[in-house]
Image (tube, rainbow, N blue to C red):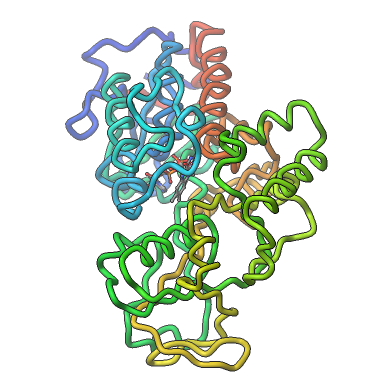
Length: 438
Ligand SMILES: Cc1cc2nc3c(=O)[nH]c(=O)nc-3n(C[C@H](O)[C@H](O)[C@H](O)COP(=O)(O)OP(=O)(O)OC[C@H]3O[C@@H](n4cnc5c(N)ncnc54)[C@H](O)[C@@H]3O)c2cc1C
């Protein structure tokens, strides 16, 4: 039956119209669309609701918000579990960096007995409970390799190894931290010790007694250095750029919470001045220990560049006591260690690269040049918060606000509201395409 420029009633599909994707009961209504898939070996799958790429906290929150509004969605996840960045790529001693009230996903509070900064395991248990509560069933082991809007049918074509999903709404929830960044330092392959990225770092005990160089001093680098120190490693940490370090708590209140409060009432410059004054009182002059502050204050820097201040949980005290040595940038690796930019050499047993992550969206999402929502430069939406959640032609982004889980929760709710309005506004889905339902 040809459905060229035909409107199909958007009734909830009955059981017979669904096929189970893998062993899941996801709402996948399979159609054979006239007009071939982009590659002839691909089987086409029609998704009546939004398709979400990524089953991290952002994707899960979006699915839950959609479900709450009666909109079925489907999540594709390349790994074999939900939240793999937490389950598979984080170190044992990790706790949430921010107090728990800023890390809750929509519609579900943390259990009341959790500490202010839940452990990684507690956060994972919370996410598992979230998925169970909202009955979210992602398709696992399904990596999106290409996604393109097809203007001739008004739908997205989203391709994996062997499937082409056709959907009207595409939600990108693949995270700001998809790919580990390996710095391009000369000689890295020569180094005969262990060189690993923080995404593969598990625990300090694995490096007990070793001489370890941590390259990078963001929140992860600082925490890993501290963990190593607790496990009797001899730690050096490369501090290359200026950055802000703040105590995790000020006056008994979380620095994050206090900052949010201040920003409601006073200009960012005044809030920064207050934070830096308190930080100086509590932490002293960090410049004396090799940690120089940028001219722009921490909150202004965060809002203009996305650079997050480091929230100190004890690393600075170890730097002050000399247990962690601050060293200059690395010029090149040698077979036994590194040569620093000041010309000195030092041997190390292990080198841990706390050099961050990057978004990989633009490696698979293809957008027309004049409609580009995701920037090719950094894989983030070109528009900034609070307008970074909606792109063109039914494209959405959740979790790209540089505001952690709080930002993701806000995105998820806005996206669900927007899509549900469209879902409910007409009783029909417009399939104005040169297609056939078989
Ligand atoms: C060490 C660390 C600690 C953090 N602590 C906090 C904190 O305390 N509070 C806070 O608010 N934020 C914190 N964050 C920041 C942020 O909240 C987390 O990174 C969070 O996991 C982001 O969730 P997400 O769903 O956006 O991305 P992710 O958790 O990275 O999930 C993205 C998912 O997409 C999948 N995916 C990627 N590409 C594809 C593809 N092509 N096809 C299919 N699937 C794909 C990935 O496998 C992954 O499961 C922390 C980040 C890190 C790295």
